[in-house]
Length: 424
Image (tube, rainbow, N blue to C red):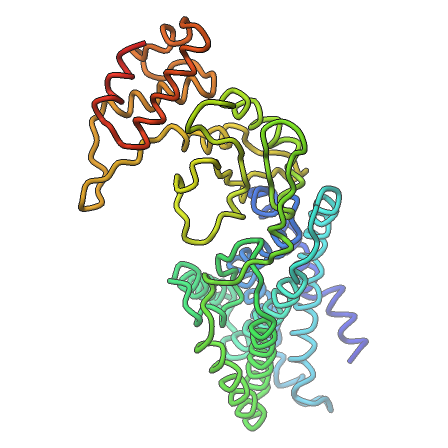
């Protein structure tokens, strides 16, 4: 069997599967570096996010490999040889699984080198997320082997790949219930979330039993398939009655704050601390401009550390920075402009009527924009915004105007906000 496997790895579908998985893996990493750059957990989560495409490829490769003999009318000839029935199936599955997984891991190894250069947090059990992803590829390969065994047509491989893609997509865009753990896809949890060990073990066991079920069905081992099916159901039950995918506990070590020691305080969670210098350089000048103005925030903090359920604006002393998708492949800050957009939460009057709907005079928005332009030292985006007159005032008068704006925005005084927008 070892010799046959070696031949398949060199000459069968396996080399093409390895090359395809490597190419698709590189492409996926290149198009969204903001999802994984600088974070080990982000890289592992991104592999699981990519399962939507990767599992479909593995299904296609497995179907093509296992249906080859029947397409060439060689199945009766091979059946006449003194080999166990399961051996050709095992060889087909192993060849596709080993080659496809190796190709993908080679692509992600390159990304891992980039992450290792800058990552500031390596905990959180991200490697278990990665291992479950590898087991999912093995299960997808087994599904492909079963399809190829049952339907030896050439169109079986692409149709099976499309069907698996659509099936996983339905789960991916679902509501995040506990049923989603039965899918190998990333469930939308944050990079600083902790997946309970119980769920990881059950998910791994589910994928192993499903793989065994598919291979036993392909080999027509009814008893083995029945046993694997019972085990799969036994494992699935505690999964689907457990925790959903969108309310996971946070990793306290990942959210430990790293703060500046001088100037206005800027704090980032440890998992995002690789962005510390870039974020500080972008945010501190704005905080320095606001220093001493009544009602203005005095510090900026990574949004990952924001208490659950706390809305923006409830802590007037803090401005929250969204850094979840702010990294480049090399670990730098992807978009300082997005950080400046986060700072605009300071100049946003949140006014709602008793029904909870924000109904506000359009002129208040103009005042919001005027305040933001002054705070961020930006050019006017509204043609008739009186930013030039505001900047022509003495510095202390400009700061007094901004303090009046913050006070009026805090109490949602529309008339005062409108007057401030017309006054400078």
